[in-house]
Structure formats: C-alpha cells, structure tokens
Image 1 (spheres, rainbow, N blue to C red):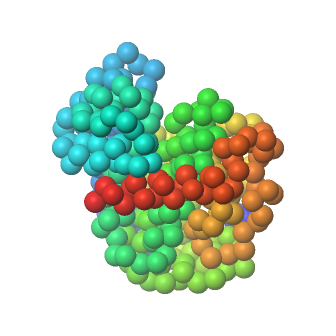
Image 2: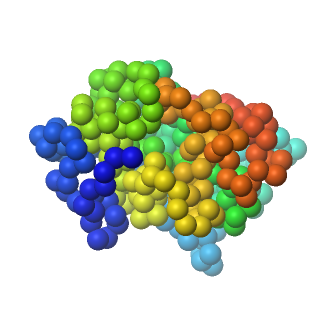
Length: 296
C-alpha cells in the first residue's frame, strides 16, 4: 500500500499541499483543478445529509424531491424498472417512500445524481468500467448492510471511487488513457496515478467530497477503501472494502489487474449466506446497471 500523508484533524482528508509521493507541482495543479469542479447535485446532497431517524425525515425527503422535478422523474422511472418487479406502478415520491423505504429511495436518488456526472463524461471504456464497478460495489455493500444493520452503506459503496471520476473531469482523457493500461496490481495502478498526476484517486475523492459537503463518513471511505481491513468486519468502511474486492472478483473491475478468487475475498460472516452466491450476486449487479441505463 502507498504511504499515508498528513491529514486534517476535521475529516481525515490529507492536508492541503500534503504529497503522497508524486511531483509537488503536479499535486498543486491537480488540487487546483479539483477545487474548480462544479458542485454536486444539490438535491442529492440534501438526501445524503438527512438523518432517517428524525421525525421529519419523511417530509424532508419529499421536500428535496419537490424542488427537483428531473431527479423525481428519473427516480420514478428506476423504481418502476424490472429490477424491482413491482405489481403496481409507483406514481409519486410519497408512494416510493412508503413502498421502498427512505434508505432505498435515498440510495436510488444518490445513484441517479451520481450518474448525472457520469453522463457528462466523454464515453470511454475506462470510465464505463469505473461506473459499473461503483454500482457493483454499492449493490454488494447493500446486501451486506442489510445483514449487519448498516442500511446507509450503499451510498458509501457507490461513491467510494469518486476520485477516479473527479480526476477524469479535472484532467481529461489523458487520465483514462493511463488508467486503461494493464497493471500488475492495484498498488501499481496507484503508483501510476502518483507518478503521472501527483495524486491518487483515494485522496482526490476525499478532497472533492469535503469540498462538496459530503458526510465525513463518506469522505473516510473514499480515502481509506484500499487500505487493509482492520477492526470490526461489520463496520461500514470494512463492508465497503470487502464489497469493492468482491466486485472486482466478480468481473466488475476498476482497473485491469489480477483479481483474487471470489472465495478468498468474501468475509467469513457472509460465506454461508445465499445472497452472496457469486452467479446470483453478479445478476443482481447487472440488473442495477440495466436499471440505471433506463434513467436517461
């Protein structure tokens, strides 16, 4: 793993000017470019920061969607997709909130908003790979979260690779060209990011997330998802770490590098659960990818 850099006390995001091994000039140039990215989708950001335990959560969710007809329309389109197999059509946000629940609606809303950024990225094979890896990680993390009573882990899985998208938006096709190569390992891919751009995607994602006002828990996942698992395996960060590795082993890779066998990356606590049978899980991911393609 790459060396850790100094971090801010507030969020754990590397301090401005801290360098993780690349050229200081490159790091500064990319940092400036990242700071100029357009803000994240305002309504989705509201959804991320609503505590579902609050008595006002239902009304707060409705209000976020009322101010954004485009997000509402896409959410209803996805909610009525084949993935959910509903017998009755969902026509309103209130119906979606009642039938699907707050966390599921939040996860779909954030996915759609995140896809708005992906839609603005020139279509390259590499960025398609990154998007599908992010969706796969989110779906797997969602299954884990249900069993571990961590319902919000889907969004952490979805956004864990935000740094790759941010670097592409900041640097253009040159980033995708370098990262579309074949690597000996994920570590080698990170070394290329440092050598060529002065920053790796983990730090880039955490920086942009802090700038956009993402919850600190999501910033931490972006910064640390490639580090070794430690502590409670049911911790949200460790669930995303595992989901990321499982997605890669199922064929939804973020970079072209050798993947460990699926059985070697599934945490022990999930190995006897039918939800984590690889073929079935792969099909669930494909359904989510197909559903998101409908929201265009």
